[in-house]
Length: 366
Image 1 (tube, rainbow, N blue to C red):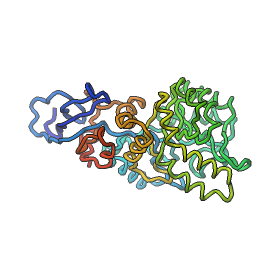
Image 2: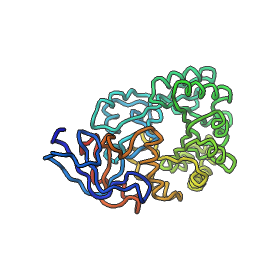
Image 3: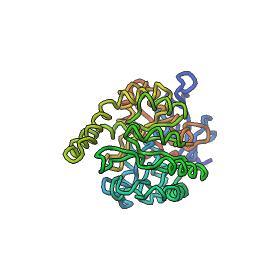
Image 4: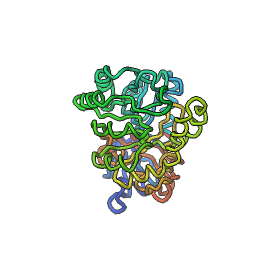
């Protein structure tokens, strides 16, 4: 064991949501790994006091993407650093046209779980973002992105249809069923961008694993999601932009604009109803398109505003989110990725906006 770089985290270490068994008094980071046993013989130990959480998760983020499409490595690096300094140490990248594999070699940047590139219907998504294809090619493109990603594939499930002037589903039922089955055969889970109501039931019945945004959930579809265990990532900081988007597109697409305003008006009610029904809810910001990075604390606060209890909202970006993505939290032998705060985030989640220390692979990076 090396004497250098040993960290001692002392105070309240929140290893889980359980108020009884989920709190430890201290941990150590030795050679980049967590241990709850005091290391013997360590001479150079740095002690940090406070309330510790596992490195936060942003389960809907886009590194390597901005409002116009792919960005260069310098911009991608700044995006990842902004997220890291906000306490986000694990990202599920929900679609990016850029190759960000080089980030995996950087010990100072967050870990990324990639969903490959968006798969969209021709002329039915933001230009330069995704593969734009027709339904007969869906299975082949899903297989391609399943092989390129880190166990996830991202579909665009609905978007504005210029002929109807409103949101509508992008894929026929048969093709999406075959595509999801192929992803599962290759060991990948599938998620989909969905704003509207009509796209949800066919995707869930086809075997989808997660839905992004899910603003179109209703009394009819919420029980279906709960029964199938389909998770949602509401991205409420993104949904907050719907009125501005509606205003910008109202002249050309008045039906769509009205629809977007209605989805926005009931966003909190929708998320709370999903949570109450037992649907897994996770934190995601949708950063990297038109939104800034580093918004994870705002998204957690939005979930609380929607009526989700504070500890459950924390779990959605900490313990539960890591388990859902197959990554460890604050466990013996796990990578020492954690964030330390000056007060208890369970008492006030707004504490997340001001990390005292950010520790990545056992090193203090902020």
